[in-house]
Image (cartoon, helix red, strand yellow):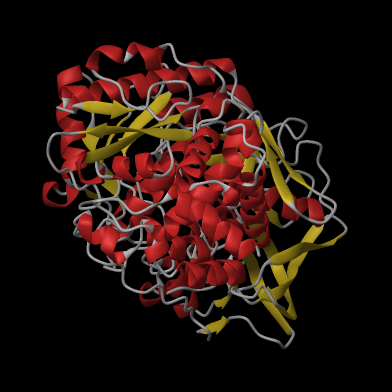
Length: 500
Length: 131
């Protein structure tokens, strides 16, 4: 078992496969390769934080586990933060571990429009998902851990007459500590720093943490390794250089915002590299009740509805956030703002994630900086308004006395007879505070090398031994949380490598 | 200097109320020093710009040609409210960042959490696996 964290000395290794990125895609691919008998080196830009290292506050989370303090932004008409982690286990450390199978309609669309997959391919993906659900203890949120916010959402959806359900998550025996976003100190969430990564090491693999990859090494059109430089996570001081040679192949799973730029920096040529960026941007609506909700007690996310996933294209779910995040989210300043925070205990926040049509682009600047160009199209804004109005109605149906839309140009709070203000609200993205979550694309799959960067097994067209195994390959939005899909794809891609 | 300006702006956003302590009752100087030391350079730069922006713009909100720190507390608060709800997005955004960074301290304070029925946060260890 070998782990190299930040070090001053240079390091050279040789293994069968190098995997860049230890999140949902990278850790799963590395684990599958190691189980198949290959020697693997898993390279992670961020540090390895065990549960005793996890932060508690939002400040600590931004400092310790968010990718560069969460300053990544999708830029378009509005600036929307991109929330992802940089640590061993990747975003699985800070997400809510929501486990949703890849929808059949999505995979049929891939086959029909892109020539990606067939029945056997789809069946293999779902079979991997069957196994992953067992290995990572996927469980439905138990009522005792759901929290009042999720119970209210279920009540409201029933009254408004749409389907919802307690979420299924990779969480074993959730106790509802409400700390998913900072990392689960209760050891209930099956994040991959606790699951697949240790197994990679137990099977003889090597993990490099605090080790941002700088380039994939190419010999002609064959990937033969990865090089980079250790970086101290607090001071960002640079340490020794590392080179990991790969006898059989390189798997890149550095995240949607990092994978395409890494390939660009490595000299990989493809006209679609960085293109096809998509997302499920989302925002929330607060309902204020006449009794305490205490949304921070219970699962951070416990209830969802996918009834509107296809038409109009959105997902609604509960999301509890701590006071320090609510403070900046509420409108106002000074005494007015502080007085509004007095409602915190009576608030429940529910969010809509839009299955957006918009397509953006990931770019790498001259100095290596990454940027994402992305703007909502009008139909996406209409979906957003519909989703927010649905949530407002659901809040009122669940007994909320007022709703805080959080939309610029609308009143701070509205009553039950004012939901149409949201429905007819502004179409300018700058009127909303959104975050970009569930990112896709940048090296999308397509059977045709002129229309996609990778094939259906993540292999980069025109290159040997170079595979992408994260959400970068996903060519469309899913309309559901992507972790389950990413892991199943990664496992499928790794199996194909082993078979070869 | 920038810390002094930042403190003045942050106190405007989170003053003391009957229910909650004000941010000026919290270890604000220590927080600012820590934030400067630990935050991403881009985050710090945005915070500094937001702070300067806050202090240089009262002429456009409360129509007084003075920096915000020279205003009375009530006028400064009116300035903060108008900035944070300004019709121009690129006016609201720097102020949003300033308010968020101040909120990270204010909302995590044990006294604030206590009044919201929440236990104090344990310390953020800031540690990681070294070998």
